[in-house]
Image 1 (spheres, rainbow, N blue to C red):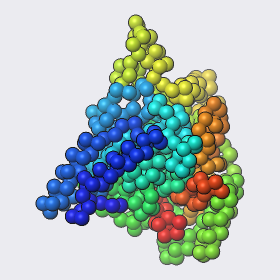
Image 2: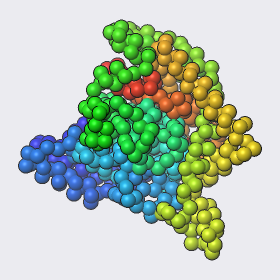
Image 3: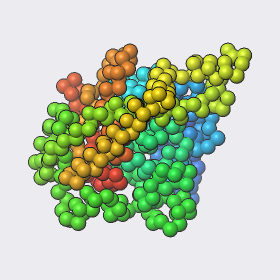
Image 4: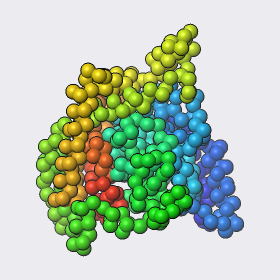
Amino acid sequence: MKIANKMTKAVDLVQEALEKVEKYKDYNIFTFVNAENALKKAAIIDAKIKKGEPVGRLAGVPYALKDNFLSPEGETTASAKILTGFTSPVTATSVKKLEDEGAIMIGRTNLDAFAHGSSTENSYFGVTKNAKDKTRVAGGSSGGSAVAVALDIVQFATGTDTGGSIRQPASFNGVFGLKPTYGAISRYGVVAMASSTDCVGFFTREASDLDLLMSITAGRDPKDQTTLPDFYESSEGDKKDFPGQRAGYDRALARDTRDDGLARRVSREVLSYRIGVIKDFKSDILDKKVKELSAKGFEIKEVSLPTLKYALAVYYVTVPAELSSNLSRHDGIRYGFRSKDANTLSDLYEHTRAEGFMPENKRRIMIGNFVLSSGFYDAYFMKAAKARTLIINEYEKAFRDVDFLLTPVSPNPAFKIGEKVNDPLAMYLEDVMSVPANLAGLPALAFPAGETDNGLPVGLQLLGPRRSDAELIKFAEENL
Ligand code: GLN
């Protein structure tokens, strides 16, 4: 990371980023530009540096914030009409931690409305263009964040990954994208999609930057009871709120507290990782990478995960169920947009929701309500929950034989804008290789692995057991 110091002024870093925001305007990356606030904050940091006062680990680093993170800077819309006009009174825990270290938000980035999608074509603000080919999609849902990093506008960007929304756009634009272990980073202040799979994560151009960002943001949060203890413990907040716990990021700690698979490798004290490839998840780029890693001396094993064929179906039952419940709070009373065309209370609810949600949001709300309805709950929602447990167990078993799994991120590179937009099922198929990590709560790191003949970036992803985030990043730093 390029951090402000005596030589590099924060104001210059911010100014440079803002100029690039302007230069790449036609990519439709940002839903809001934070110019005035950003420059003010940068000036404060520069003044501190001048006086020799301490500044944070991200002092003056410009970053982009996916527009589903709450903070009072700019409207938080989640790229949905129904949230337009909504300025948050609260700040997401992850945002607060980044800002406490001196990071400066340059702008909010475009996504598929409420993060439902794989291309940003479901955004109320239109599609974000791919960093390498403007006729193609950025991927999604965190398309804006991926392109902001790929075009070097900012040094890092935040994302959320419910079923691939960090990894797939990272892969489509040639950058790193980390979806951490479920519960690693607080979800407090992040617009909820599906609470049992949502994860906060990051886009960077260097693997080592992911390590720094995790060390700053991961850890217990009293405002999110699903956050994990002893996980990259670091922030002042952790120390204050959980005084008994260790503070200070320590890779060895992350390693020690790991489940069975890791402990064994550490006790062997041999860094010869065993890397699994999944029988049904293959690609040319993957083959090439496997040869490379094998030549470096890593043991490659083929792994069979028969329940994976159910993962997409499980995802598209479980996630709509959860999101239909999470989206019920948008009623035209509490946040943002309200329909003008309403004479009664139920008209107000109905018209606000009809006008404010995108078609894909509505489709998922309908599916969610259907699978949760009394006649179908057992046949769909419960069945999916049971199948999900089988998937989780199968991964756990696989990680007794291998340390990591290496798979493609998506079945194809960035597709043309408009190509899948009228075919929701084709769009859902995009997610077939990314959703399993979310269902099982596993960390997964997407990294640039090559390109197609016509120059489109292609990423691969490395999955590890829960809590192996530090190890994945270290492996990527050293070997990918
Ligand atoms: N593309 C997936 C979906 O549409 C994942 C979205 C996400 O991770 N937010 O559900």
